[in-house]
Length: 160
Image (tube, rainbow, N blue to C red):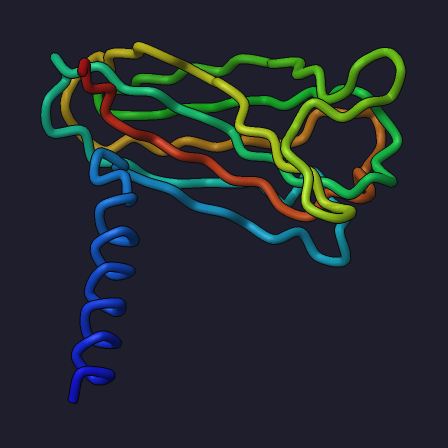
């Protein structure tokens, strides 16, 4: 009986850690796998967020995962956002992914490297409503090889 009680407590503890570690401020967190690790122009990463309170501040991040065989030390992407009342925003970003000596900047696990890259931080949406967000690779190579997946996350910024 004591062994069973021990395991129940262990499972409860792990469940508390897992649930407590989740970010409940996320409005959206999507990840799109790229077919055969090739990111072409048509494989856009998209999400829709419903902003209820435009007075709150939000953070939008682009998540990129690539293999060690990715040929470049940077990446260019196009970010598009459309929303209510014909709102539209389009910006081109360049992100540095490696040091000049070739050392990857993202966190690595085996042959895969992950980068969480800021798109808009401390951003206030202009009005409540549904916004479509989209990231498209904007390099000369099409498809862009050795990109495993891309993602977008939108979270409310809270002050602690």
